[in-house]
Amino acid sequence: TTPLSEKIIQELERILGAADMSVGMAVREQHSRDESHHHVTDGLFPPQAVVFPRSTEAVAEVVRLCAKTRTPIVPSGACTSLEGHIA
Image (cartoon, rainbow, N blue to C red; front, side, top):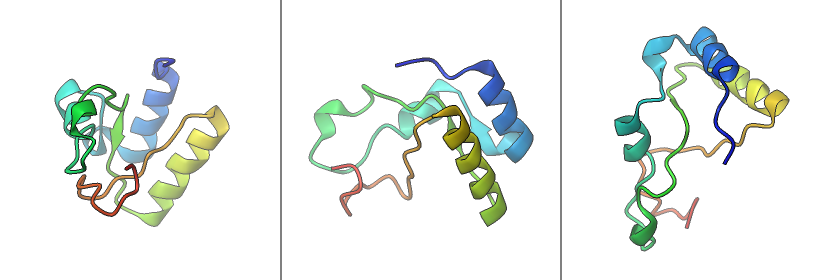
């Protein structure tokens, strides 16, 4: 996996504000787990950043940035994965 560049992190902070995103390991690990039957992989592949957009426009800006930089996005809700979005 290619590390997320500092430029992308700075741009996410500009879009969202530092309070609505995290590159901290605790938050990243929390978002790499779910309630699915794939629990053996929990925590093995944490995201490089977690964002918490508070508006449709913020979501759109994050998606535009990720599309422009070819950065993958994995949407997440309550992190149950019981609906099968990752399983």
